[in-house]
Length: 416
Image (cartoon, rainbow, N blue to C red; front, top):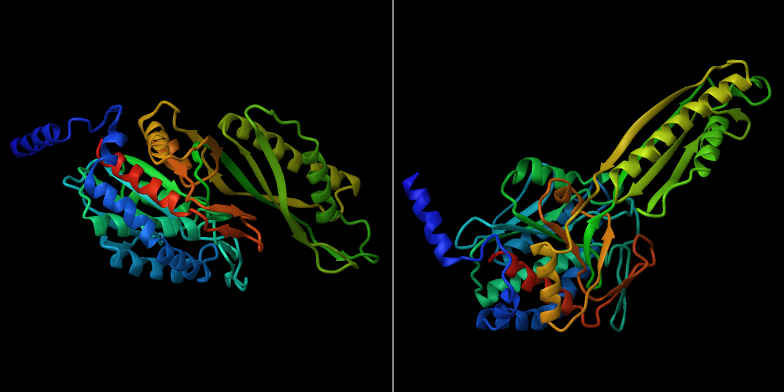
């Protein structure tokens, strides 16, 4: 205990700003020769970083099948000077850049997974500065920025008071339900993360409000039968239609913005068969969890009402049942605008001569926000369009700006 108290006292003298905001921290870092060298290295390395971004984007990483891309990132982390590089139980790739002390520990993350299913052509094409390919921006760019920061810090031999942990995580998209983040914060690095920055997508925005979501898969079930010979049976597809019609009439608040969407439907055997089952997947979102819960309540009532109406329509002949599965629970959260992490992000952006706006979104940062851990998401630079589409593109013009900002921010957050 005496040794621990002595160590804490020494650290307090060495790094008196740890844990509190001090104006000018970013400006002072900009005068540090090693930081200047690191920032210059970012620009010099950008052509090779873009090559890595393309290579990673061309490794398929559908949800729950991120292994091949993870293996490549693991090798690149080690080559970039990170230590104790490993893959955890969920599939997250983790690499450490130890500071003079283990704390504060900043996690800098980008996600491995994409929205595109197996078999998608992920070949990247080039036309001047424009790269085109599914996932080239979201989030191959985030992974590229992680590599850019790690390499530049290693080349410039930058030392930080605290540790920077680099994480390429799984399960950010769709029904991944933030499984990588949940594993990271609840088990792999439980109680060992002080600040969190996700690099997701393109541009130079700063996301400090996390939009939460609930997701459901609902399946109506019945005996099914011939469309002519068994006519008069309750029909799961008709019940599904009733439910969707009820949902379509929902009224939700504009502030906080609250949304709902039936994104996928399916079921049935043939045009001349009464279906044995029919299903839908429903997404509801808001930055306010109570607003989400209100939509959820109306949704569940509508599902039950549609079941009752369809059964009653046919006198309970071929009576239907319904299965309701909650397949996604992404918590909402926020990091205050006046917090150290947000103000440091804005200061780092200004110090480099760039501009950034605060915004909201649904990202890996949602989970630490919900735990009360300071967290934001930043763009990775460049300009992107068509995210989540086969026509996704990334303009590499001045893309180094995103890596420079991420590096300066990471160093600043590891020093306070």
